[in-house]
Amino acid sequence: MKKIIFVLFILLSSSLSLNAESDVKRIYEGSPDAKITILAFESLTCSHCANFHKDVYPDLKRNFIDNGLVKLEYRNFPLDLAAFNGAKAAQCRADKGQEILHFLYQNQNEWVKGNSIEELNNNLEKILASKNFGIDYKKCINDKKIEDFVLEDRIEGVKKYNVSATPTIIINGEKFEKPLTYKNLEKTLEKLL
Image (tube, rainbow, N blue to C red; front, top):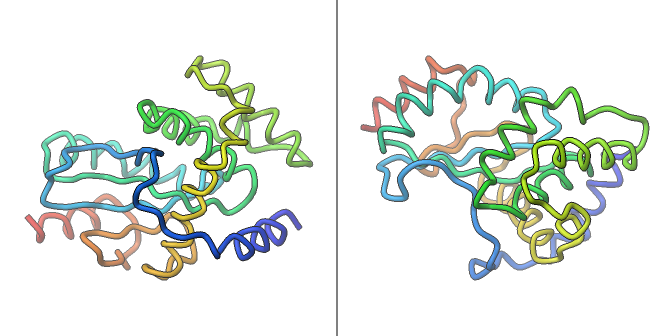
């Protein structure tokens, strides 16, 4: 039911304009001038996204991002209200956004539980406070500019890249269609260098 309500919310919000002049900052890692740009459309409540951060991301970071070869941009594609609020909290502190995202994926089992959105929100607020990211949680999840920014990512994912599941990886504008393992990703990236 939560997902149906969220999808309806997204559809009603689809009249948003994709505003490149938003003062909300994009969360990314790596050199802005890297030859390869990866867009990672993710949902914070997605277990496959958490697995990507656990199993693929460390090698990707060590071998490509840290060497200035790849810029990894995080794109919001929340699949439910809990992921939507988590994305808004991360975007609220874009200067620490990547750290917040990694932390939420690593601790997904601790906050993605409960029988209501209220329980999930309480769990999310508590876990973010435990790490002291300096987030005013209530202010962040009620910030209209951040909300629009997150929804615009999701709308762009659907319209421009035909994203329908998470994680979806776009490499230099092309959808990565192979199983998302480090070996598959590495082979594709090496061909582009």
